[in-house]
Length: 279
Figure 1 (cartoon, rainbow, N blue to C red):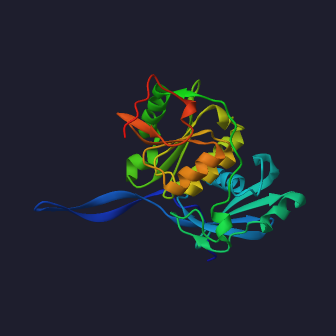
Figure 2 (cartoon, helix red, strand yellow):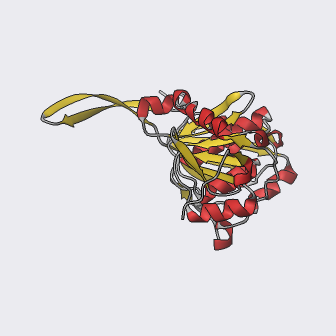
């Protein structure tokens, strides 16, 4: 009999495990995140393959296209199809011919693991390219940052099940948590968020971009592509991320925990009662 149509795998699997706790040994199931190859193609031309969690794939397709610079607006993708195959998933997109010409400008040639945001680039200049400068005059106080970050855990449904995925979210002062996306790769989570926001036509310049991961240079580049003026993360930025954020006009807020946070670049966007300088 011919095989039936392939289906997209679930984002979470239950697997058997043996658990050792002290002298006790137990056997039971545990929820873990799925990781599958996801291929991007434009007008039947292969562009990249990333390993990702198979959830919010339409958002992934749109967001990846936006942060890669293949398109400037979500509406430039005229058609999008999610196709499950034997060895993974293909995100097939069709662009107007004049937009398709951008594909060759920065085409990735290597498969990208879930933790990689720079795979397949052809020169060192591509890695440290200066993103567009953010000119937003938006400002936020400490209470807003604490409120925004406090909203993350309850919205991280996949992480509640698996304790093994990253999240990227957008928070607006008047609307609260607008969107959150999760993935085994932090870059993928941000791309999925970018797609969700692009499809909603959300004004990213008026809110906070939230990350459950460290702030690496490629996360700054993606944030700049979105036009995000402030990036807040639970972990610290890398030194290169700080230099790039300074040049791009992005405020980096790291180590954002319940007891405080640290601002590494452009602190003028964060209101403070008093700043104490410690040598």
